[in-house]
Length: 571
Figure 1 (cartoon, rainbow, N blue to C red):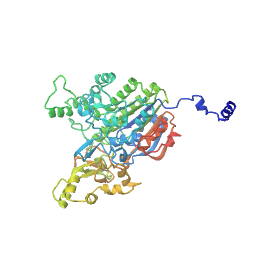
Figure 2: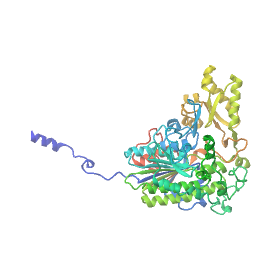
Figure 3: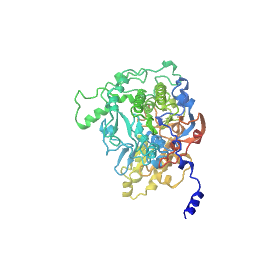
Figure 4: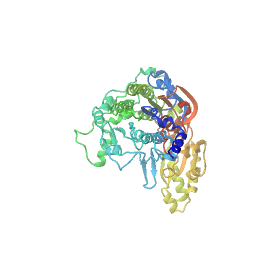
């Protein structure tokens, strides 16, 4: 019997080498840094090329890989959906973030994308701090990294905007920090932390925002060198409150000297005034609309990397970093302003600081970095008109009123339109039921009315949108951005070049949110760990970023991901 057992044992195949001997450790970058530049059009990479230094955008392009035709594949192209789609690898149809705000039929009120009254502010005001990612229905690539390492990887989100920090950091993040302009501090919420770390308190106490606002905003270069931009004083740019004209230099010390509007509103609502000794004397929220908001963000991100020892702890860490002042400046001054160019030239220097710090902290080639944008932007309406180009401002309030009046004429008195958000009409469904009107028929009635309006390229009933597959075209963008519990009843698309004008007929600055190329086409740069140098003209989608990161890290893609790994950069 013993002899038989020995024969059987000798007959067994040899164990694989991996089972006999411990192999090399799984190769992963020490750190991943996801950079989202708010409202960055693709063409800004090359529009300002001659003015960029060697250490920022040019370094990413010169050493990394660029996808020259990266597009969003849904509408609306706004900050909340953009950041969420980058990090979930899917569209609003699956992650549910259909806008920065949407109408909630159950409560009859508009909902903000990261609002969460179940949590408390940490280090800031309740209005600024009661935030979390709870509205996002899918996991993020940052969540998946935490899961893959049994929560040993450290994930932190940093942005001036709450939604630009919270949504990329994901549900399982160690922390997310954003800016409270009423105090000039980076704050968080109890969703993440019971209290701010000591290093954050020390950073806030140093008064960096006030220091940046203590000097006028002059151009980085002599103003005559800004040949990529329109003249400094044009009618379609909006001046800062307190300025007579939107021209350099912008006197930030004087403009920030008043009490913040948010503080005044809070005091009025509560009926109480802060003691003079503790009341803010400066409007530190102003920094958002200057390039120094990006510099402040970079300062805080660098301190985050140092203090949290990211990329130095034996596990892959992830910094989800977004620069938002580009968006504030773009909205106010437009895409061709000297202010916009100056903001990007200064951001280029901030990126150089960041890349140098990453090299020093984790080692050259040890970090994986990607840079993209959450959306682009249209040209200013006045700029288009001045150059006889198609486009302009569409009065959204007037459009909503025209639909409401038409429904009153057709069906009698009543508040037929409850809200209009994200180029969508929300109809009064209880009133339709009361009047025994068919929802689909009224939706089509409104869609037909909208199609007769000037500068409307398409309008479609939500019922029809859901009944049909839309592989290409405007319908595809709308279907990918549609999540029935949160989306409207009728969706419309403005003609190319036309933008929503909330203060119509006055149209200042610019905006975004549509499916035309100026809003969907954004940069996509990869740099660092195992990234080969090159570029591709292949059309790729923003939802392809998360599965590509997953492939680099050898982890599961996010739960609702429908993007695909980008093979050109992975080869």
